[in-house]
Image (tube, rainbow, N blue to C red; front, side, top):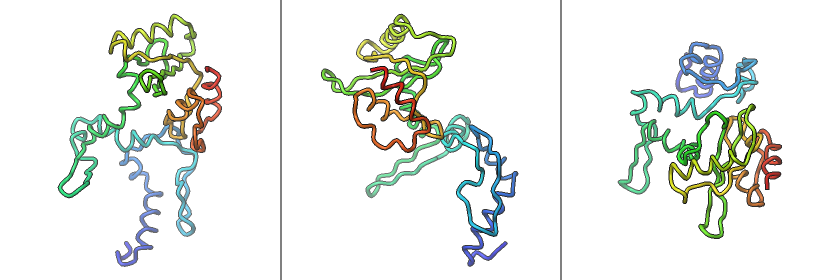
Length: 219
């Protein structure tokens, strides 16, 4: 083991040990969306940022979700935030998971969930002349389900029955897919902009920009 006084060598050696050790990888319980197809091992040359090319991971699951789901780990402190003097807030993995999933669970909170007909659902806020902002629900149906006006009404009424009519989505729109990043995060701001006919801004992080074409075609 190199001396701690030789910082560069410590980093170099640690990187090599990490790449070569499957035990470390297994200990981390890393969850892959797609398995990697290679492992970079060039310890005597440049240090890479992509040690496992071809693979994709769910960072939210690895960092938060798996701990929040564990009965013991969910009570451990995940974040300690300090603001002004004397202002301290500690969040457990359970707290962090609940807040981080707030947006992702927006539709579930409004009574629209994955079911027999619905494969995925996402809610976005859009400008409304009367209320200031309204909810629009985008839904990806199961392959054997069909887009019908009856289903659209059923979903809207289901939300109204669960949370009251003021919370019903203004629209329920059926699309083929959602615009997502490589890690699978839904880009809701782009969906909201497409609905409102506004500039969605930087789209470089979107893995499937063609999904926005399908969303725009619904208006």
